[in-house]
Image 1 (cartoon, one colour):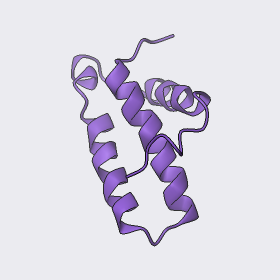
Image 2: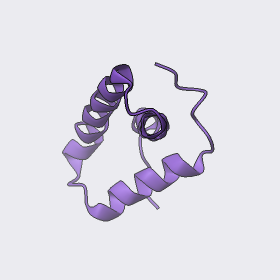
Image 3: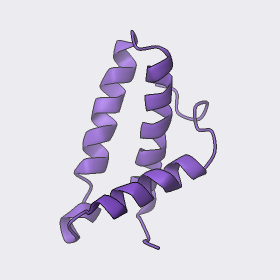
Image 4: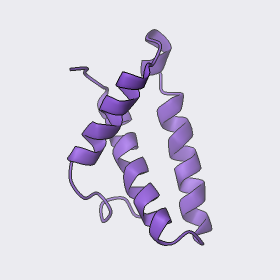
Length: 77
């Protein structure tokens, strides 16, 4: 089991919450913009500079974010 930095894990949790909200309301421009910024934050995080990400690492990060419960209310744009 990998250890991810807290800020990377939080960004992925927020990404998941924003993605779900955007799926429910695709006409929300501010949600699309927030998702784009979070995608860049997660993808270009310094954690990935030291180790090349593989599909297993991405999957584990995503699964951990999803297992943290419903984050829809915590991350409002």
